[in-house]
Image (cartoon, rainbow, N blue to C red; front, side, top):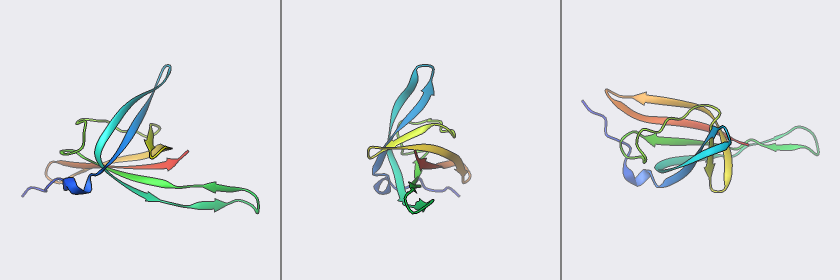
Length: 107
C-alpha cells in the first residue's frame, strides 16, 4: 500500500527559509507548501499585549521544492512579510517518507 503525496492543488503557498550562518542568515525560497495560520494575542496587563500568532507549514517530500530541505528549531521562516521562528519540525512516514510538519511562532 502506498500513500499518495499531498495534492498539488493544496500546495499553493511559499515561504523563505532563513538559516543562521556566521554573518547573519542564508536564505532559500521554498515553494509548493501548505501554510495554515493561527492568530493569538496574550494580554499581560491593561497596556501590554503580545501577538503570539503561529503558522504550520506542510512540506511534501514529493511535490515541495526544492527537494531535500532540512528544517530545525531555531531557523526562521518568512511568510507574507512576517518572520517566524521554527519551534519544531516533525517528519511523517507512511511506508515511505511523506511530509514534514513545521510549527513556527511569530518573532
